[in-house]
Length: 226
Image 1 (cartoon, one colour):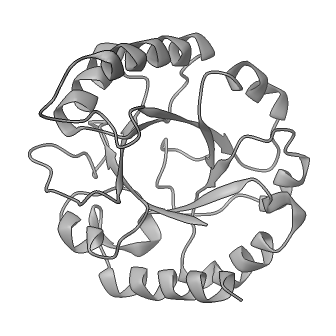
Image 2 (spheres, rainbow, N blue to C red; image 1 turned 45 degrees about the horizontal axis):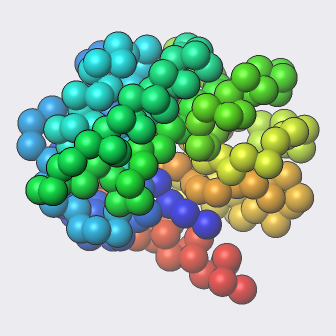
């Protein structure tokens, strides 16, 4: 099970020292976690994810180039055609000769498409995206595109029709570790690839509580190793 810590801003190096699999950087200006400026070196084992909300493709490409992003997370109403166009853009990037910097660790910039859930979800909306993204991410539907701080009903994922791996997000914190571990023991978690945490582990937006993340990571790793 992979771990993604999203909403990086103030103490990025301290979070990276915990060695999560993914770190998310939000490039949506209205967010209090909006990231700008220089990104510290994170090591070769951490995947950098850029989070976008209905951004122009040119903006996405520019951020991928600037920060050597390994993946982009699309948190808006991006169409399957938009995802296909990004795939084509990323293929061109991967074919470019750039000896001084790699665009991603595996030579490919991956696409994570987000879908928001509250009480129900029509899984048929996934079908057009099956061939144009690498992962889905299921988050809680709320006022903001993400970081709303509460979980959706994970039982809805019993009806998940795909074999595409997905990230589970939305209000995951220390207080619902038991519920999370119970979910991960059930058949509907078969394609759950990663757990995505954010606002429940913050002192303020973009400033992560290192102690709490350590505790969560330890609990998750301990239970999953049993």
